[in-house]
Length: 111
Image 1 (cartoon, rainbow, N blue to C red):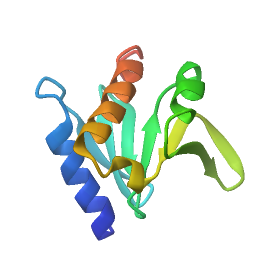
Image 2: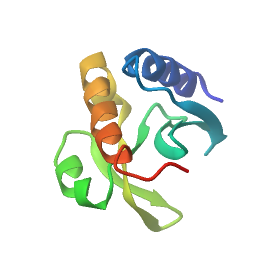
Image 3: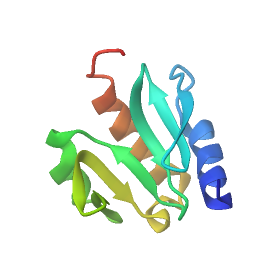
Image 4: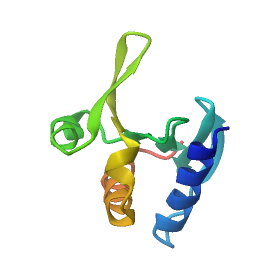
């Protein structure tokens, strides 16, 4: 796991609200933060963040600075965006992304 991944994972742990308990699972060469069995966010090796915003939240999320469509081998992943590390340097910005993801993931059934 890269230093950028571990550093972002530490910041995510610190930024998650106290009432939100996430399990961490190895995935995509990093750590997936899972909330009630659903993927919430994944810090990626280049310091960016895979953020789950849901299909209905895509347009709003993509309008934000640093966000782009998640592309895996030429296929986009609906409901997920990648947020560049530059857009996450500020802890408040990271916290806002986590809140955005939590709002969506809390609507999903527990797995």
